[in-house]
Image (cartoon, rainbow, N blue to C red):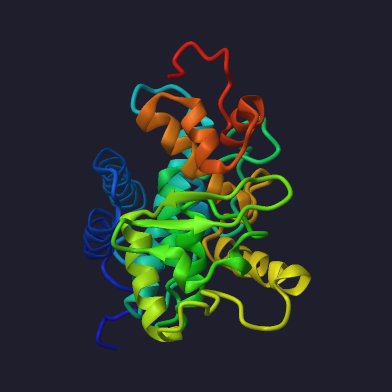
Length: 297
């Protein structure tokens, strides 16, 4: 024997560095990126000092559970939001390692946590959106899931996705025209910088015909097209480990975009306009904003 364990994986410290680099290069919100990187560093310290773990493959579900539920820095019980952040950070670590070719699983796969909010459907958080982006990239040849996620980040609902054509994209202005539906109005919506890049690649794949649907080409957009669109987003949520959250659905991506408008502008009417919703009360429910919150914009 040469001393190398047959189940040895990548060195934990190196994997954490690579995951941190991936987060910083893919995350638009610097403060949020720093928060995840700090959590990854704490996880490395927790594994090394508490369990003597050196390789990523040595991290078991028991270790992950211990880390997620460990007391906060001040000794208080970890809040629900902190536990979600820790679980997501560990998931990112293992996802980045797998994308680099490491034969490791996900020790948080069966770790269930309470919902973050009392709402039936809630917006994704910034870190969860990043996790979704990573999950949408599982195939180098498949641009459809990346495009669907990019359009969802612009508030497109599954009922709208099948109707979006190449001519509805104005990548020069960073926006997309959404055709609306029974419960949402038609509107121009801003694309995220990440989304613009994915859609630019998608247009190169589908061709130059401006009338071509960006996502769905088979039959009528109604029914089958909407089911296909919903399936694409659900696939991403499943692969990201988010589908198990009882308050996360495909519409949670659009809700994230609406919430971001509120946070950036302080105006719920602009969030309503971005979401294509007339009622401000309904907008507040969609984006998970309590009107009575003292710290709300």
